[in-house]
Length: 62
Image (cartoon, rainbow, N blue to C red; front, top):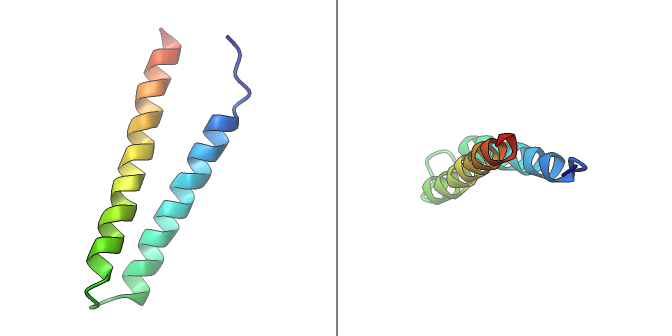
């Protein structure tokens, strides 16, 4: 089954946005109570995107 690659493009765009949010929030919110929840949520999003890529990539190779 052929895929168009749109899922990969969206996945890497989301990964880039989550990383950017994480970095910017750590710089802007340094020392604020809001820094921790924003970092946790964006960090978990990054982990989820990478895990999704690994799981789907292994399924496609079978």
